[in-house]
Structures are given as structure tokens and as C-alpha cells.
Length: 461
Image (cartoon, rainbow, N blue to C red; front, side, top):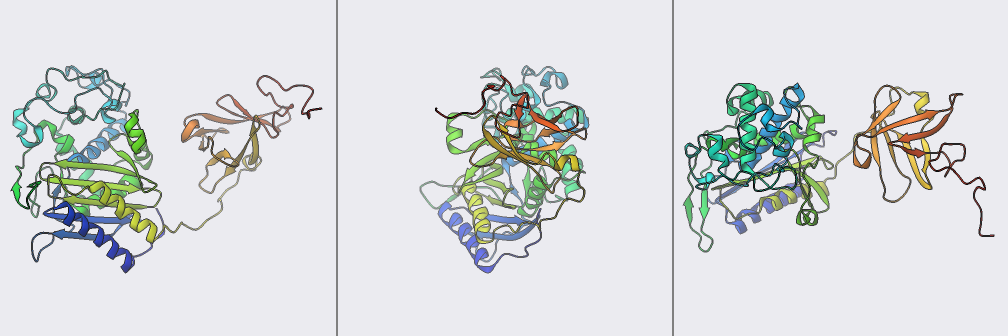
């Protein structure tokens, strides 16, 4: 990520402590733990507790609820990268007989499969998984309240299906596959399906009185891939680093970028609030920055992991209460405090190691009609194309090794950029998904669609 910036300044550390202290006191949480990651390493941990003389540290387990979904999504993307499935495959192709097999793997990951939000019967988060031993018990008699692919509708049973898909293709239980393929390679030794001491107990705090009630700790059975895991701030800090940098033993950085890309159509309210769902991860806007990660809750526990990739800062916050502190707001503030007090120091600029003269020839100013664009060659080996000024369509492009480039983001994502040359080898124009970019506005020497008026440019007279 970036060159190490060392430990946080004392003023920054005090501001972080103050933020979680306010959250624990005002949210009336029995305990609250947090960590901040920068430059690929944990740079701060903090805790507040109602127990005198003791505070949980970064090795105490809390239940992380739906952050479990991100782990399950990593397993599914691994299967995709190995060629065992395609994200566009209908579930029926790999896991027949569920009754919801028309939903695709990608739709289940993005909560657009049309499935119900919850299971039928007793509240699944507060009842034993033995009440739902089969997938049919998880799905119920009306598993598809909406057609697949039409809208974002958060579905916990959808992730139970993804866990069953992993089990079917790997031939082993979900928790065993998770431990072998993700937890052990990443060194997440304090992340587990069942609690391991030391761990916090889950509590419900009375809404109108300062008293508490212990919450039951259930094994969720079939629903485990949606919310079963226990973890620590130490392990989740390491997981946050992986979600940005990748690890070739587990999942590549490119696949993780795909996981962090919005994949579900937005509801109007989500557009207004700056929320989008990706493939097992959420994107939220706060304080003018984009944060990606996941929130989680189960009776007795709240959790949040959020990353600002641009700032190279992540925050993890967990509490052992059913409700109370708004952990996303806390995590977002922890990121903001560090990003604003100690802005990211960029890596030193370095020139390209090698230069292709034919590529250098393409750099500079181009016109799409009368709109001025600039094509630049950057030190990371990519080509960027964007407006010279103001807002507009822009993208970076990756070389295909044959004189063409593929768009990586925005309007031109997946589109092909190529330089079209004349018989003498000189460049006539750029072709980008049928758009013609010329060296001069409506260059009469280039094949501008619709042609150029032979009278040329003129004034009023």
C-alpha cells in the first residue's frame, strides 16, 4: 500500500480513544473494542468496558454476525477463479433441487436473487440451527417473494445457499473449507465458528433502564455462512489488509477489487444515502469518503469493519450488546480522524522502467467531437483517458499485449481502445467502443462518423 508512517501521533490516539469512549458511554454497551489499520498494519487498538479494572484486548473474541458473509463470498470467488463455477451460473447447475435454482451465483452474492430476507419459523438468530436441518427448512414455502435479478433485497437464506454450494463443490463442511482455505493461510487463528476463550458474553441492555439481560448463544446450523463467526479486532485487522492487498494463497487483489465493486441495483433511498451492495461487501458514503466493508449483528453483539481504500485506513469496532452504539458511524469516524489528522503519504513518484515509443506517440490531447480529452501513460503501465477539464467520462486502460487496451472502470469498463493507423503507419484516430477520437475537433482527415462539412469551420457572416 504505502511507505510506513510509523505509529500514530499522541493527539490522534487521544481523539480515537475519545470517540470510542463516547460511543460506549452513550450507547450503553457493556464493552466496546476497536482497532485502526494503516499501511497494512494495526496502528491503534482501544477498548472501553463497564467492568472495573479489566478491558478486553485485541485477542478477545466477539461475534461478528454478517461480516461472516464476506468470508463466505471469498470462498465462492475462489471457486470461480479455479473454474469450478461461473458467477452467471444458475444455482440449479451446481446445487439442484432447492426450488430457487434460477437465481444466479452472482445474484445470491449481491442479494438480488429475489429470496426472502429471513427464514420461516422462529427467529433464526435466537434459536438453535437444529430447528432448520435442511435447506428446505431455511427457505420455507415462499422462498422467492420477488423475481431474481430485479432488485436488491438483503437475504440471509441466500448466504445459507452459498455455504451449501461451497460444501457441494468442495465435498466438505463449510466451516472446514473456511478454516483450511482462508483462516489458516491468513493467520486468523482467533476466528472460529464456535467461541473460544477468551470471549465476550452477549448482552441485551434494557432500553429504559440501565440493566442487562444475557442473550442466548446459538449454533446457527445451516445459517452459519450468513452470520456464525466469532473473531477479534486483531484478526479482523489482518482480514482488512487482505481485503485490499489480496493474498495469492487465498484470493487475488483483482478478484477482491471485483468483490468491492457495486453489483446490485440501487433503491432510491440507497442512492440518496450513498449505500450500495457488492459481492459480499457493502459500500457506504460518510464524511465525503467511500467506505467498503460489512456490518454485522446477532443478539448480544454488534460488529463493523470499514475500509477507506483511498486513505489506506481501516477501522474495526465491536460491542457485546444487542443494540446501542451505532458502530458504522464509529468506524467511519475512526477512519476520518486518522485520515484527516495524518493524511496518507504517497509513495515516491518513479518513472517507467521501459518505454514503448509507439505508445508515447499516442499521449496528449484528443477530441471526441468538440470535447477535449487527454491520454496519459502512467508509471504503473496503464493508460488513462479523461476530460482535460471538468467532469466527464474517464477510465484507465490495461494493455492486452496486442496494441489494444481494455477499460478498467466507469463508462468504458470492458470497452476496447485501439489506435487506428494509416497505410504509412501514422495514427489516424483512436477507436473506443465505436467512438472516434481525433487530434483536432472533427478532423476532416479522420473517418468521423457522419462526415465533416466540406465548408469547414466558419463565423456568423
